[in-house]
Image (cartoon, rainbow, N blue to C red):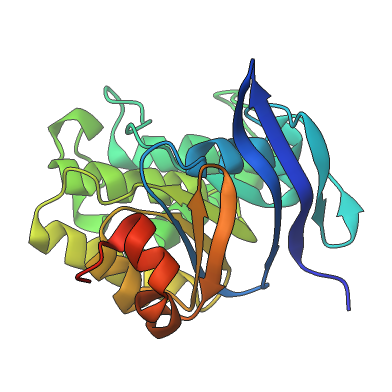
Length: 248
């Protein structure tokens, strides 16, 4: 059976440094896969290749049976492959509603014309409210994004990504800098999303990773050193020594 999303011997070199070293991964259609590893393990580089931010040096990426290696980001978004970033990427001077509406309007047809077709605009507005409701942002719809608490800004970024109707959503360090309460909130949202789409999480918070992941892939020096369910990864001696710590 054809894998939903997979990589074959994916490599990326920066000069003499190998950041991604012949990585082969298969992702399921739904569920939550976490990618972990020490700083410099190649996690962000790996997802940057898949999402079209940087080209692969060699190897291939396949999505629903079609090769998508080195496709530009905008094409991948249209295909349903979306992502968030380590650094919050939102329009700070626009309201929460406007941030999501613009993303949804672009996804609906690529037009930012003020006088859009009435029915099309009505559909976009309705879908925007649905996303805000789903992520608990409805009461903040009229707030400028810059006025939001940091945790809510991160949730807004997820909302913007959802406006692209993703089948695969890559989340790069979504809880970085969050309070425990904010982390708990967004982790529940992420887990809920994974029931409907494929969520691929890059994260350093091991408590979070172990509590919500269906499967975990561990990278070290650009290579996979382990894959499995959370309990298997936690018990893996190689992982304990390379990343989690011998006493984990």
